[in-house]
Amino acid sequence: MTAQQPLTYDAFITLATADPAVVGLVLKGSRAHDGMITRHSDHDLYVVVADEAKTDLHRFTGHRTIELDLVIVSLAEFRSAGMPGFERYALARARIVLDRLDGDIAHILAEKARLGADEAFQLAAEQLDAYVNSLYRSVKNHRDGHALAARLDAADSVRFLLELLFALDRRPRPYNKYLEWELSRYPLPGWDTGMLLRAVGRISATGEVPLQRALFSRVETVARDAGHGEVLDAWGEDLDLLRR
Image (cartoon, rainbow, N blue to C red; front, side, top):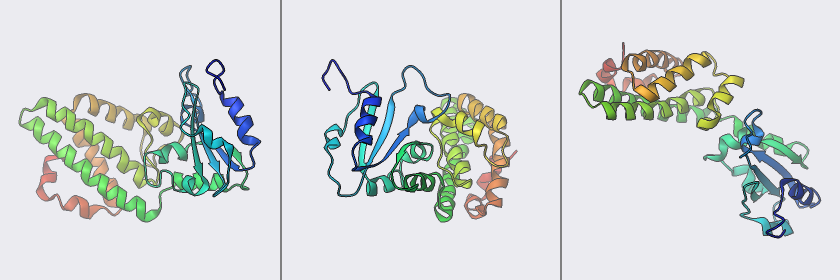
């Protein structure tokens, strides 16, 4: 394509579909999330090529325009993409455009959407400890008159809290952009979505200590029920500062 005729999404789909080396096409990002498309949304497309296959489509490696962003990978690379990594959520909610492997592309995406039991347990333990650490710093800074530090630590704690809650449900945490979208369609078990979103929004903005303590009370119960009491108990009497 010339500069006057940039490669369009539809044109590339036609090229890729006609290439027998291509075993899968996967669309991620806003265009894979119903209701999230805007006039600025491009097409983020994974092009999955059979292992060791040769294809002329490699000439588009790194292609990125305001309409089309291409990632061209082998099947083996696609299996490992985001496992772990930042791409995991994007692929977990991706949309299949082409699957020439009798459902194997869909199976790979499903594996990315569901954390293994041991993986989820370890991640939840790590994020719980990080959440308590930031929460403790926030409340202590508030007590000692460091207002800005208290708010910043509170905002940090929300990030770890969301990682924790999604890990407890064995799911990758959505990007901030898709948090409301995700929870409105796939709520976290045992949590009121509206309450949770209001709480994390207010804590991020204000660092309000009573609200942080109230939320921690709920989190502590959930975490202990999930088998993470040891992580909490390691904090000893410091937890008293976090309780109502």
